[in-house]
Image (tube, rainbow, N blue to C red; front, top):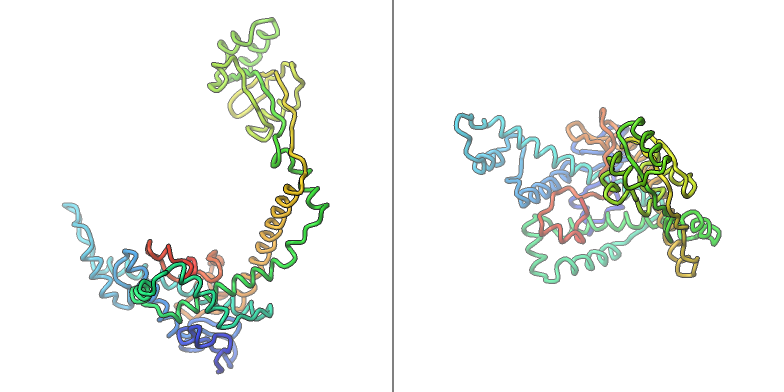
Length: 393
């Protein structure tokens, strides 16, 4: 088997020893996963599970759960467990062990997802002809480190507490840069928007997005049943005032104290069963009963405020162009993301005991929703402020 040349030593290959399998299918002994023939060693997994465990411990989850005995984890759980309520039995070692095992399995899934997704990024970048150098990654990392750790001493402290090396962080930074470059590749051409597209978007959304839609002031009576609504309508038709009819029949708390008046009703706001007839009605026309989920309405439109929109100025055109670009990018990435995940999952096989949803040999498990490059750890509050030097997760 030959070492994979795409993961140079300076970027952490000593901890992410990818090997190209020279023999048939399956995962070679001593490896945890194979992605299209590129394998990740169990030693690599052990390295990252230790990092993930250290982070979990710093986050208040106790000692790192180390199988198969989980000795330190069990001892920590015992020491931190609250005193049992009188009459309740103390948890057994078996129960503590089960809790530690669950913690370990959670960390294991996070680490496996991280390692798999990192290789997916490498393989996809290779497929797309994307090349990044050690210098590119180092530059990106240095910028992130300066922002998160202005003082060198703070960075050194972080490395010591997290159990990571700069090579570990450089590897993570590489995944971030790859993801960024792949995203840029997918979005190529999305910034090309024609004047016709801008005008079409404006006409479709000019009142809703760039102005005010039509509004109507309406007098209403809301009743619990149709018979009451019919009685209220007859009373109005006989010449009784809206104030008296509303006071006698209406159960609507919003309009009852205002003589039945609802101001600035918009067609897009409210139940369609009500707003639809309101915007179909003529001014001064007594309409109903109209059945809704609240009851039965009779109503009369008092006033119509016509829609207005700001003109399609150069500034608004620029704003609309950016909206269209963002929508195009979102659609392109959504389409690509599904195809990307399905394609690489079909080429991913995991060793027994290391199977996660991203593995093609996972049984009855949906594909992971964790984004590519996700971090295999739970961060402390301080670390959350330092995400520029760590993948999100």
